[in-house]
Image 1 (cartoon, helix red, strand yellow):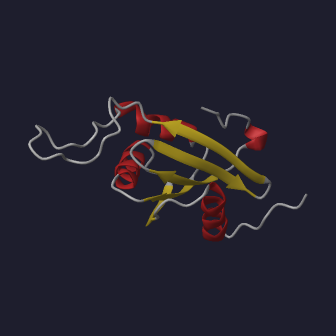
Image 2 (cartoon, rainbow, N blue to C red):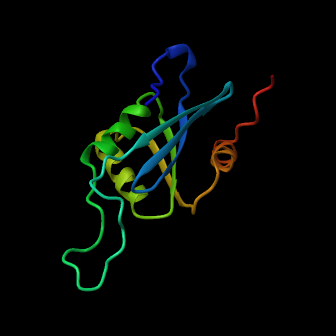
Image 3 (cartoon, rainbow, N blue to C red):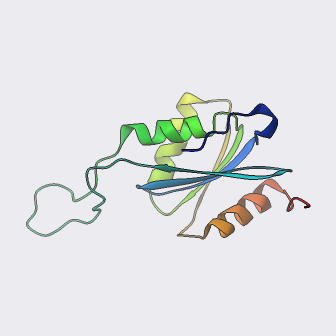
Length: 132
């Protein structure tokens, strides 16, 4: 996992696309975008119930996953969370508890490309492309 530690390169805004396996984090500012990927460590990625099987069929949640995402955006104070399922809600609740000062917004999004995620973030935060 790439860290956003250098204070001179820290971006204060981030857009996160999350599902049960992966969080794609794009910290962004006027000078560019810093991507980070956090992976859940699940015993199974299976999400659908099979007939005549015991259990819900859902993969168990990795308790360190949401904490690792929070660590990856430690310098951000304005975050947009995107995703197709309920994991985005779990992340929002986790961040509200651990970082109550952060501005959080959430939108449902299917499976956009990385470029589309960045474009959504730029539009949301009213940031233009950095000049080369």
